Length: 176
Image 1 (cartoon, rainbow, N blue to C red):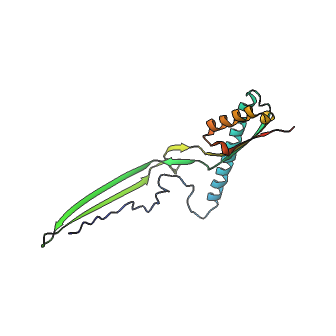
Image 2 (image 1 turned 90 degrees about the vertical axis):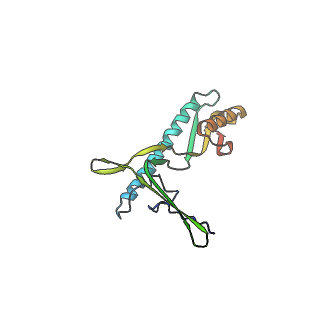
Image 3 (image 1 turned 45 degrees about the vertical axis):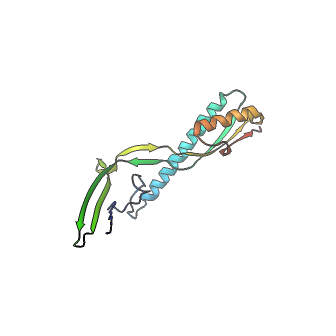
């Protein structure tokens, strides 16, 4: 008696880590990939600057902080989760041989494919969800950074705002 299970999964050949994520342009040999990378880096830099300005403005309005400079480092460029159609098929069979032994075979297929919409003769994937870039660390140089209670307030605010641990936040005393 032998129990045998046969499985086939994902005929697209996509890696589990790649499925459902938009990775950027195709491999067409042109400079398009580099242009997309440059645009992504530029957008990331603009997002960092926007966060830094918003934190700086918040700190200006906080008692005891005074003038402050802010540096924020992002962990990644964010992620787009694209919509996928999923098709599954399952078939099973059981065979009995002349000696009375049985063999059960299960055949499973799963196929996933991205859903595209046509815009101005270009196909674009439908984005289900877009995740913002995660913050890796924050450094703040503030006039009130020498005061222990101000330092604590700033650090706790950054922990709450960016969901990062205290050891990834450094508050310095600003020298004018």
